[in-house]
Image (cartoon, rainbow, N blue to C red; front, side, top):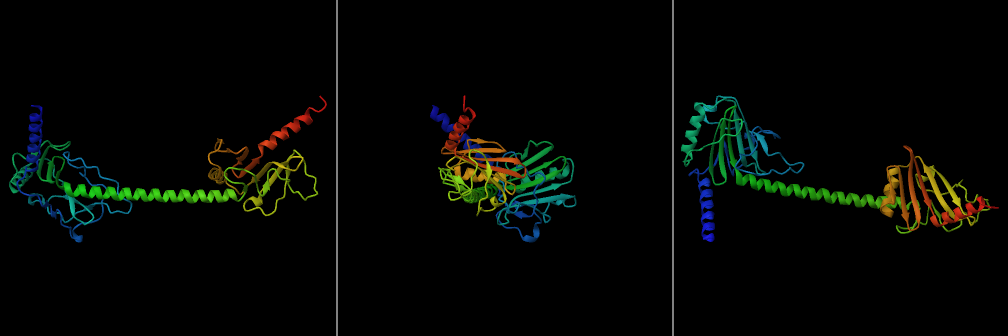
Amino acid sequence: MTLLRSMCGALALLLSSTAAAQQADKPIYGGLGAQFGRPLALDTFGAEVKIVPEQDLPANHRITLPPLRPGNIYPWRLFPAANLPRPYRDLSSRSFVMLNQRAEPMRVISRIFERGCGANFDWLKATLAKKYDAAGDIEITAPVPFERALRISYLSRQIDVRCGPATVIEYLDVEALTAWTEDQQKEFEAYQRELADIEKRRLVMNQRRAIKFADSFTVGDQYRLEGAFGIQFQKPFARNSTQNFPVDAPFYAALPHLPEPFDRGDIQLVISPERHPIIIRGTFKDLLFDDVADAFKAKYGQPMKASSRHIIHRVSSNHAIVKKLAEDTVEIAFIDTVAQAEQRKRLWAQESDGL
């Protein structure tokens, strides 16, 4: 019994759908001077139009129009060559046609500036019903703000007419519109994939550029921070120099062969009694905070601390730091944290000497 009811329901749905599709017994080939499935002559339609009055689809169809790929032609065109029904030819009107890639009409709309639903509308109802041998009454409930409406359908094509604030006549080929929509969706998705590929390539290039920049002033790889500006931790600074450099106190160092823009900055060092660098700190005006931050991130990964003005990376046991001291001044510091801990012990021993 359940199976029988299901079969009866399916049959009723099929008959209902068939009846709706056969509302007109004669095919709808087109209208208003346009024929479905046949390209319009180039001299019959005008410029592209982004917004068309009455362009919302009839309520019995739900087709979501995709965004167009940039550069694609808008489908709606002015249609000055529209062939209006005889009673409307002397009235003011505007007509539009929606074309696919082959200039074949998918929709045609004429908005005629005639208010109300008088004799012309009655004539149109009778003429359409007769021409297409429509089954039953073709009048339907009018959408707001219209007063009366007509609809005739044959397979995937239909005619909609409504009157009230104006008279609107529309011809629609649902199959053609659906095919165009699917094509446009595929094109837009392909465009999005292209953008994603371009963005990936851009990110890879930026990553490589940032790493190359980081390598130009740091010593070591992504896992080891061994110094900066040509100076190495755990190795004596200026081994062969006879100059007495301060120990455990900052001093300015003149370093040769620095790459741009580091050659125009000031670099301070703090060294141990063995001349091993503890802190390497540079201050620069011709340097962008974001460039250094990107370089550190590209080489060392995510920072252990980050704000809009202060970023710290832990690389093994050492630290790489960038600070924005002012809008035009950036400080970069590199710290051997093990050597710094030994320095604190020495300083404390000096401070507490004799106690």
